[in-house]
Image 1 (cartoon, helix red, strand yellow):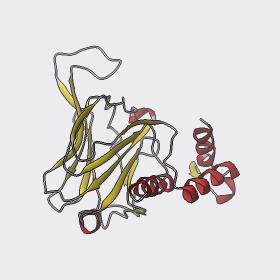
Image 2 (tube, helix red, strand yellow):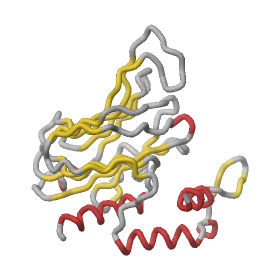
Image 3 (tube, rainbow, N blue to C red):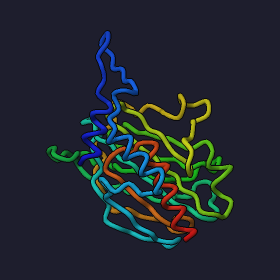
Length: 237
């Protein structure tokens, strides 16, 4: 939990005119040392790692983690390592549950389906879709995967969803995907109404997926880059 505490401290800022502002001087040495170590040693972030499976292209079903409630400021990250080719409409991995209420709430007469999926778009980008089953939905896709991912080699795509500032970002291999003209410098907004997603059996649909990792927090961009390096370095060992 050291990283979490340092991460929180790094986001504390001087309040000016009701807004939060952070300066480089506020970032603690422990956080900088942690990030430098991740970068230099190509380490897969271990804190809050709740799922790590390597289907190696084969279909697989595993018990999935309960994802954080974004309304409460939680977050999560989903990282996938792919190899080979994929066609538009392919589902790489998904985790949906059908229930009659959100977690902690009384059952209702209405049935909802909530969860998430990684799919291939018509433009051969990789898209993360998250829904709480009550009409709120997040869709965020890469803009660079179509040109670099499907060359037959190994590539890593990592989505980070942060319920604090309500933003989502994606790293493709070792680069932050800037989102093209759709988002601002790589960060898109998460709908403020998007709530609890829960947990469900994770279905990995085989084909191109070599490894799937889920963290119970939003990875920093530097951590996502380190994760990609660690996963790709393992391939070339």
